[in-house]
Amino acid sequence: MSDLSQTRTFDEFMEGIWRQNPVFVMVLGMCPTLAVTVSAMNALSMGLATAFVLVCSCGLVSLMRNIVPKEVRIATYIVIIATFVTVVDYAIQAVSLAVYDALGAFIQLIVVNCIILGRAEAHASKHPPATAMVNALGMSLGFVIGLLALGTVREVLGAGTLFGVSLFGANFQPWVVMVLPPGGFIVLGAWLLLFSTLKQRKEVRLAEQGGGHGA
Amino acid sequence: MNTSAIPPQATPATSLVKTLGIVSAVCGLIIVGAYQGTYDAAAANRRLALERTVFKVVPAAKSMVEWQATPQGIRPAGGEPAPGAVKFYAAYDAQGALAGIAVEGAAKGYADTVRILFGYSPDCQCVTGFGLVASKETPGIGDKIVTNHEFLANFDALDVKLNAELSALANQVKVVKHGTKSQAWEIDAIAGATVTSRAVGKAINDSAQQLLPKLVPETEKLRKKES
Image (cartoon, rainbow over all chains, first blue to last red; front, top):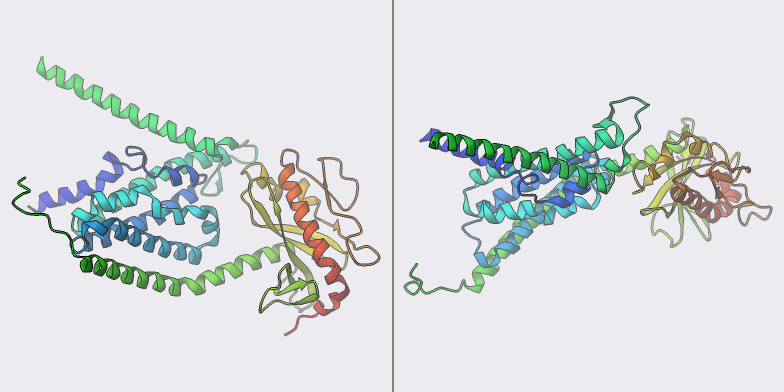
């Protein structure tokens, strides 16, 4: 019994990281994904800020799931999400102004991040707090990984640095377009291509195996 | 599903209002708590960032005092900021002597307003350097203004002397095409980043035109740090 519940918790956790990765599989939250991933540091800060809001709001939505009538649920979710975004906004100002300026309006825009409202509506409002928060944590990690995948590639190619550390020395000619908006689309497209190729290959392999057994 | 057996019941309005009230109250408390908890740290951060920029454009500085120049003259900042006033910071060295003055300036760049802080030395009546306060200029192109050594060399001693009547700059600060600088009041633009270069020049020119005629006659007021 405890084995079963443990696997289930692990599944909840892994869902967001792999099977339903918000960036690469569900293709949600594209606005921050494309806009703030010009450097790995920005990507990481944005990911962590979103993670905090996602986990906290899913916890609170789940706690309140039995007392919130469904007629006013969207209003309550938005108020709860906006609350934690405000908290994270203040916290970033207190920790680092440089990060705050780099992320700009995208911190406030976490309020309308569809991953968060989507999780609150589709998962947290139907599950107990612990499960909801584990699922939200997995989703958050999936989002952080997605942002970092874009941020590292764009920073390395577009500025020749990683987390601000120079990689190639002074003679490196940065591929500037990578830190401009088109670079965001190019890198995202490349990652999506990689993931769908992997998925297709797996399907083909499974079909071949299945066919082999049948014959 | 047999819906006719259980007639749908409308949720009473009181319950809706009660729920929204509870949620708002809880969320309100969280927000106020976060605001109170982070206010001091955020204010300290902002002050530190400003100080760092001031000390960058006036390298000898160890402390600073905020002033503003209004049409009536200069006075220490504080109270209601007068409309159209230019903010500047008198920076002092370790002995409390005036090391230089840092002036705020802003002008429209390529993407958005470029906000800068530039150092002014009353002794040579020239601009001695500038630092970025806020800029959204294109990475790799417009942001060269803080890394390009040739461009920064323009600000080793950019001439901003006043005319004989002390009413305006003797020569307007002008941004010229790359490689054509011939006067001490001209700025040699970065090739490929002319718009951003011009924004820096315009920000310096606008603030200097407004501030220096007020500041220069009263520089003595700033010489010693008031304790």
